[in-house]
Length: 250
Length: 175
Picture (tube, rainbow over the protein chains, first blue to last red):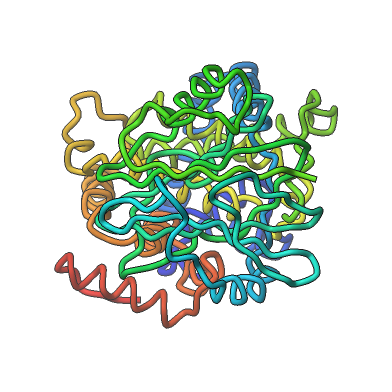
């Protein structure tokens, strides 16, 4: 390592964290002894660390991190497939024949539509009913597909009988911009719904992006209004076209 | 990570507690600096910091198996902050004009501050992957190979993205 090359900021970060090998550490230390700019850069990182511990003491940091974990934990009841493992299933799901019409209220002006494609552990595929609850078997994996029509954003949540609302897509932030082209388009990865009882999946296609937190709150309120019966879930109090499918977990 | 279906609702284990303190001491300042650099707001940076470490704690065993936990954390932090900005649709320009702008990451002298802030200002014009590549290459000063490995792309792909960034921003590309 010559003075001309300098030590990367990231390498100094790793040095401070004790991640460098003995050989790397020796080389970096030698360089630092002869290179004022790099020594200054390391000193900045040391100063930053001191300021950080004053600004955010450990107790506060720890409380904040555990609060974040507590917020996320109840909603994590889905098993997401490792993309590489789900590739084959996804390829098969993509050729599921979608119904052209699913009865009143499910085909919306502008051609917007939603379908839930289900792959069983044995490899068979089917589409979730739009007119009644769909029984899931153990190991079934669900993928959400949509046709956006003239709408531009998509968001999906699920609500179970206990009133637990899970933001499916996205998990935070705002609605996702829909994919280009006529569709149908499938949201990434497939989901396994765990636990027991019924769970409603609500997909909202909208003109403008919706805040996930707002939709989650609306779903909780809808669950309350339905008295916990997700098959009677009213329309969520948010803008956009809404599609609901009921899944009954094994 | 196929079985997040067994979420931990229990109190964090002793191992988790020890792990968190260790993470705080070793990596807290670097992650916070990255979050503040990108989000330009101390409160939001602290919030992002908590999100990043909550994720690290949830995947503590996998995290420890990483060859470089620092690299993993900086990737997660960068990605998280870029996502926050995208979700909020916050224009970078407006962020930079905030009167209570946070102190930039590091103290590399006035020129360095100007250069690094200019970099952030330009980022918003590019896709997420290019943004991440630019931050890791220009801010972390990683090599092309390191950035490519971190983002799971080939070196030519990363080079192409950095070249495009340089071209679009009127800079001369040099490796």
